[in-house]
Each structure stands twice: as C-alpha cells, then as structure tokens.
Image (cartoon, rainbow, N blue to C red; front, side):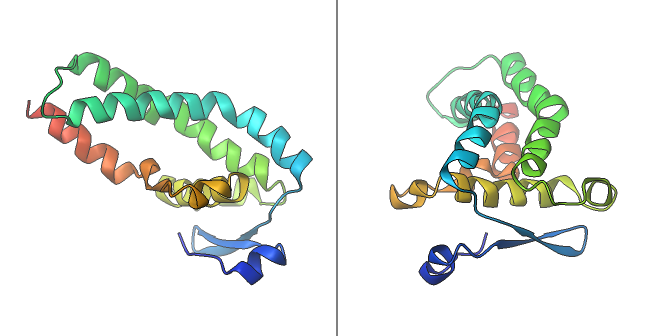
Length: 150
C-alpha cells in the first residue's frame, strides 16, 4: 500500500490499484457515501476481527486453542467471506469493470485493493497509529502454520 501525500488527500485524488495487470482508480467518498458503505462493510469486518482474534490466540505461546475452531474460522473466511471482501471493493468503487477484473485479478490483488478502500473509508486509522497490515493474508497463513506445530 503506497502512502498518499497530504496534497493528494486534500485534492481528493484517487488511489491507483493494479488488478489483473491493469491500473484502476479508487476514489474517496463523501461522508454520507462512506457511511453507507461502512454499514455494508460492518458484518464482514466483524468476521475478519473474529478470525484475527482466533489467529492471534493460535500464534500465542501461552494460550491453548482448539485447532478445529482455528481451522473452521480460517476456512470460513477463505471460502465464503473472501467473496464478500471482494464485493466490498466493487461496492466502494462502482465504476470498476467487475467482470473484467474478476476474470483477470487474483485474491491477493483484491485484498490489497480492499486495504486501500479501508484506508479511504477510515483515514483516522493511520492517525491512531493502527496498521492495516492486520489484514495480511501472508501473516494469517504463517499464524496457521504456527498453530499446527503446537
């Protein structure tokens, strides 16, 4: 995720994301549009939070976890909820050519686009020092591997 300049933020310049080898623009929304999107996004963000809590427990050296629960949460997210994450990108930027992108982009690219949408929807996260890397699929997979070795 590239850091946008303050000038770009003030000018409401779009964020550029690469999906399937093509660059697309994702535009900032006004407050009412962003609020409506956040209401749609809340259920999937809550599910992501639950998955991350289980993953954090699984990677802890001191906590005992139910491996079946860890895999169940992770499996549900990867196979069902990932589609909802992808849909949230298209819900934010309705001008994106959905069929074209779905036939050329991969999930990692869509996850990066989702992180950019989150940064636009919740600009205060950076101010609070929160890092959107908590949505890193690579980190989640490594946590799963750590859980398997316990």
